[in-house]
Amino acid sequence: MAESKPARKGTKTSATTATGKASQGFTDEERAAMKERSQELKAEARRGRAGKADGEHDVLAKIAEMPKPDRAMAEKLHAIVKASAPDLSPKTWYGMPAYAKDGKVVCYFQSAQKFKSRYATFGFSDEANLDEGAMWPTSFALTELTAADEARIGALVKKAVS
Image (cartoon, rainbow, N blue to C red):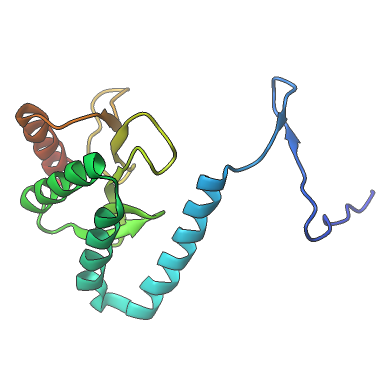
């Protein structure tokens, strides 16, 4: 059996996809998000259980960094989540505002700018209790928030933590 040699430091490798096209690996934005997640995990380990207040601070700081349209949506969503599920703990997750139950992310907001997308996203992890038959939505594209959208999100967050 041939022994494979590890790639040399600084060498870029690529994989081939099922379509036969070479994959270029992670985007700069994806690498930045993974680096942020690593830093978040280290910070959480240093804080221990007393980190809920720091999590709130971190989320508000991430929201403050967002461009105006996404920042306004994130501020509204933050208020909706806190009102709908006060037991969820705010925290950052891959550099995004997120809300966790027992340390596990239930829902999150991803600004359009995060991965250079044309819309922001409000999503739920598999920890959310949203199961409905054999298929249900887990994330929603957002370009603005209407009163009806806010009510729907509030209801979904309540259901997610039920």
